Amino acid sequence: MRVIHMNGCSNRFAIFDGRHANAPFRPQAEQIRHIARPRSGESFDQIIGLENSERGDVFMRIWNADGSEVKACGNASRCVGHLIGKELGQPDIKIETEAGLLQSYMNDDGSVTVDMGSPLLSWESIPLAEKMDTRGVDVKIGPIDAPVLSRPACVSMGNPHAVFFVDDIARFDIPSVGPLVEWHPLFPEGVNVGFAQVLDRETIRLRVWERGAGLTLACGTGACAALVCAARLDKTERKARMILDGGELVIEWRESDDHVLMTGPIEMEAEFNQ
Ligand SMILES: N[C@@H](CCC[C@H](N)C(=O)O)C(=O)O
Image (cartoon, rainbow, N blue to C red):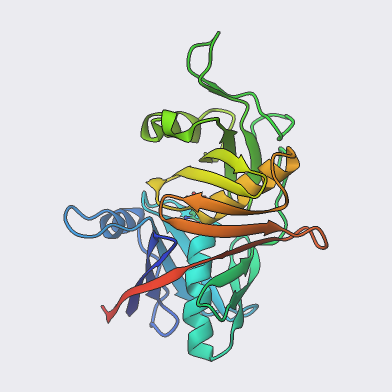
């Protein structure tokens, strides 16, 4: 099987192209953990399996480094958009995922844009364990009378996100705080946890503790989630530059059709047969 190592904004993926294999690529959770976080050597944030698709140009299956299968991964969608676009010799392709059909475009400057569709804003669709206003939910971290973090905004981009808006992102030890929110009882399916500092109405500094993968250098759906939450709370415009540890993404929540567009760099690292 062809295996491709790629990154989107330094979010790292091992992509297993199972489209021509005799049997589909359906590894056990244990195998995924072994590939993603080997005892020695390079590690990956997600493992991606490519399959043939009836509805799109390719079907993309996604596993987190901990072995859990999930429905959406923004940066991997941009990597797959580049890979299949190059293969088919056309800039725009359709990628089928468990969360729906995504359109991707290769831009002239080498960046890739993916249309992530409409964000889901209701408490049931995230999902939350109980009815709540998703612009600020009842989660507090720290001493009960003086929480250090509270009231994250929530959205689903095909996967669940909670975003804390903070004044100074450098103050937070994300590997200590992230896991407390990731499996908070309010999130029955767990949650990706964003820490966003609004620098101005068109720029956000963002770090994301990813469900099932931990602190990554960039999270594409996390960037979409932070922009949607910021715009909903009127902290930013509907288009902003997101500064992540691994690079920058531009996110636009288009007014005309409610779709969220994500644009940023991708990189081919290695390719081999296994
Ligand atoms: N790296 C991703 C998100 C991957 C899935 C996420 N950890 C989840 O569990 O939902 C991205 O670029 O969006």
